[in-house]
Length: 253
Image 1 (cartoon, helix red, strand yellow):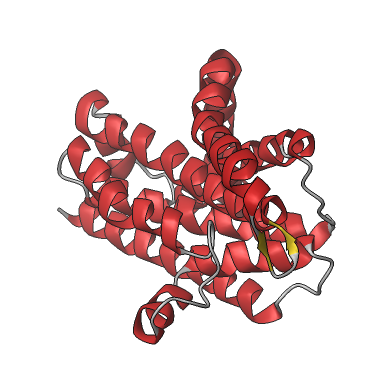
Image 2: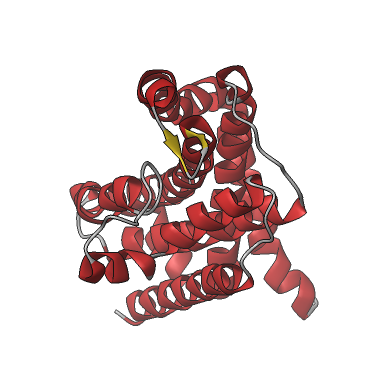
């Protein structure tokens, strides 16, 4: 077996596993991923959105890119963290993987790509659902690049959290204390102009802030922020390295 095949086979195996899971559960996966974003658009887009504007644009134009960013984040994270934690805690298939000759980097990259694809699927659905709400956006290749990097970053974070979790409830706690605050604070539902400077500085370093801000700029017809794209790529690389280190430590136990 060549070195290329050795490292590519685990990636293709993980992606095939994700495809089989999606093939048989696509209705549930699609419905569960759309409920919250759709409710946000109905409640905030039709409700609050009809009464206000942001930067002289309809609120729905501000809202939809933020919802796409948070949907990509949530879906990519959950698509990896929950199944991986179940494999580790209940099915005990994860330990067999750890002691097998499967290259750890390939497995983690496969998980990240699988989570990213799931996140982009949900994000594209939200993009299509936003049309009846009257959202006016300009979409180009950079828009999907930002979605992809956002999905890769949070899928990598999902791998790390799942490996570190001692119980399945630990993943839920991390979601409550880390993912949920980012959902509401990271330039998704409201601009950060009125946020206190210290809080704004903390929020500004988070990946979802850069994802939602960059998607919104592109949707407004502006140039994509190269800095935000680089920061998202850096987060994806850092989370991938963290996952590799965490998994390597588990392998040595």
